[in-house]
Each structure stands twice: as C-alpha cells, then as structure tokens.
Image (cartoon, rainbow, N blue to C red; front, side, top):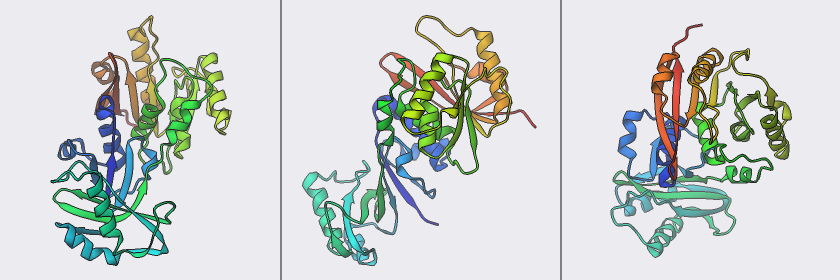
Length: 322
C-alpha cells in the first residue's frame, strides 16, 4: 500500500479548519491528529489530488526512505524520470532537526537530483520529485504541487459581505464530500453559490437551492461566469424541499442586524435530517444543543475566526433510519 506525505500551510485563524478538512479528506481519526500538530505535514495511504485542498502545497508519494540523507542518496538512483526531465524540491515539513536555510535546501535538492536517472530541468520539468524530513526519516518520491484553483473564484462577479470566503467554502465542500465518487450532495441555502461553485470545480455533484430570488440571481450569474449550468441553483424552500441526497452543506442564514429565530433554526436542522444522513453545518454561534435536539451527532467540529467574528463548523451524522 502506497504512503503519501501531504505538506500544507494555513493562516493561524484557519488552523482548526485546515485540520478538520485534512482529517476528512485523508481519513485520519481526530484522536490520531495530535501526532501531526505542530508540524506542516500529514501522512496517509489515501491519494487525494493536492489542488482539492486550499491548504495542501505538495503531495509526495514515498518511493524511498532512510534515517539519513546519505542513505536516501544511495536509494535515489532507483527513481526514474521516465526518460524526460525532472526537478527536485525540498518540502519544508517543520520537522527538521537542523532547520536548513535557503542554501542548505538547494544543496539537498542538488545532491539528490544528481543521482536520479534523467535530465534535470529547473523551469519546465516533466516530473517533480519531493524530498522531505519527517518523523525521524528522510523520504523521497514523485510529487505533485497544489494549485490554488479557489483563488480564481475570488473574481466572481456577484459577491456578498457575509458569504463564506472561497477558501472556507472549498474546505467545507471537502469535509462534506471527501470522496465524490457516486455522491450527490445538496446545499439547500446556497445563497450566491459559493459552496456549489467550489464543489463543481472539484468534481463534486452538488445541487443548490435557495428561497431568496436575489441570492439565486447572484448564484446563477456566478455559475455562468465560470462555465457551469445555471440550473445548479434552483428556487426552493428547504423546509418543503423534497428528495434524498448523500451529503449536505448548510450555512445557516444570518445578517449583521438580526438573528435567525430559534424555532426557524430548529426547523431547518430537522429538515436537513430529512434531506441527507451526513452534513456540514455552519453557524455564527455554538449549535451543539440544537443539533442534538434535532437528531444530529457531531463527529468533528472547528472554529474559523476573522478578527472578532467566529464561525462554528460541525460535521454531523443523523440518527434517522430509513
């Protein structure tokens, strides 16, 4: 079974969100996450495209490993660039015993690259190899860098001040649907379509609904701007919405001047259980009691801060039996 090293980075305000997303994407139980805290990498047997996450910078498939750099250099000739050009990159995992500076990192890259079969190319290599130190060993293997696809979506034509950022929306979609194979998801309060748009860009089938015609208009403009069907945003009230989905995302509506009435919040959470057995719920205040009251069990959670504003994210499973 292959082993993959994921090197990531995040802003301190999104540290919890990063951990929650990577746990979902890579299948790591929350109780095991502690061993990776304080570093900038995580190890998993799951192969996930690094560009799915807004936090993953590189994925390395471990093809060689040694306790020493000398030992790794001895194994490097066994790697093959496939007859094309290649480049070696040092991945900073935050776990190095000697904290190499810029020149030392480049020296490590040159040392490993000198013995790999193929032709080195720094500008447009056919293949990328990653070298890193983690958990008391050096590792080397085929690598893929993450692409910040979500950044393009910052330029959507319709924006709303209280909508999720594209980065948070992408992480939320990944937490709800770690593996999109055969999954049909729903966002029953999609607003201007931020989560639906991120989901579509990752191959996640997600249908959006909203009862606000102005929000729907914005969602359709945004979807069309990036080449997605406007039919992914449909007018409907989630309290009467029919159908059954595999997963859901619910960003509970709010504004800066008023709070959603408790009875309406409870009705929405109850309706969500009718729509899907698994969901990510986003709120602006703690929600544990109301989730339990409406039949939801919290399996993971985090907080995302922006200045003094806090969002509460919950990954939940419903106890309803079909």
